[in-house]
Image (cartoon, rainbow, N blue to C red; front, side, top):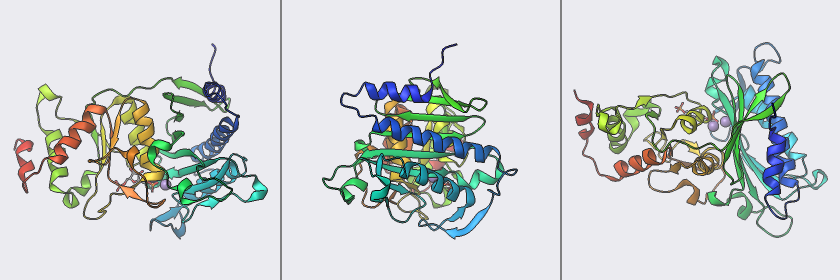
Length: 344
Ligand code: AHG
Ligand code: MN
Ligand code: MN
């Protein structure tokens, strides 16, 4: 059987781009190498190096850094940083952008990552992943400036994620559709398994941390209560699925359709998820697959961040489901009015 490898696919996509120099393929190949290393570590966690548990450090987000968070950050930074294709790397785990020193031959791309997403699931054998995003350096000269680091979401030239799950899958877009590759662990090679992914226009599942109900705004409560109402003509009630690893919840949503939500709340008034490392790359992917990503009031890709660690509310998934969420959130609700949807 003729099988397309990830390397072949990236090269073919780059060829479709007149004037391509191969630098982009070079960068993507290094992302793939780093992903294979993390995948191996994840699969052997518990028997290989001591990779479970905490490092004892707190990151810029005020969160405890797990050993695998740190291992992934260091692995990606080393491999991508020495690839000769990027001039800066930003990461959820780094306070400031890492600027590639001249001896490591800076290239024309900026690489942004959540090196390990879903860290609360590391120690319990539940899917985790890596999310990345690639921009082109915009400013003239050799210095990396805010113009390069804080670009609007639509300026991304590629984005992707890797889920370390029951199998390891690598999903990416470079603006020509969304393609998924599954790691064959015997060969150590990613093969095309999900060409031209398209998200269903409407799903039957919602995904959110409903334990936050008490800190949600009334409009959010109303939206979720509405999804629970029994009304077969609109496909309700929706099923609830929540893993707690954005990358895994997103992957399911992409394949099956539905709505993932992490709204703002009184604990996280700006939202919890990060624009550069989580929302923007997944927004690029979902739009390429025919879906939508919104803050509830604005298209995610229209945002220009003010800092690399900016957070936002996120509603992402099937086109009709995200539109329904936007509409409901825009409708004022009286305190407790959501109760009517629960058919008590
Ligand atoms: P990270 O592990 O990179 O810090 O991200 C965790 C994120 C995301 O993966 C997930 O959707 C969300 O946090 C879960 O948050 P709650 O535990 O608040 O539901
Ligand atoms: Mn994350
Ligand atoms: Mn993370």
